Length: 76
Image (cartoon, rainbow, N blue to C red):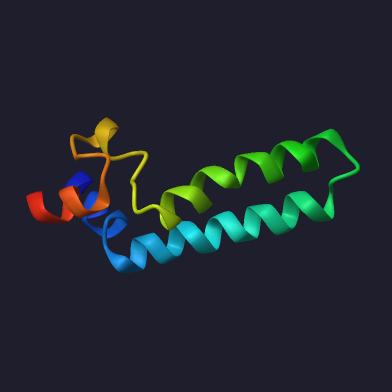
């Protein structure tokens, strides 16, 4: 199960999912920006957005895979 998740997350579809999740969180955070939670949500959205944009899987090392998406794909 864990390997299937890592395999998906380092795939192009997983990368697109991270970017889409980041954009969704960013939109949600910016729409609620006057509140402190909105600013925090917008700031946290940069994590999945950046991970997808720079092809890194932040959960990879926690699941026994490399941080780099290219290295993780090569090792699978």
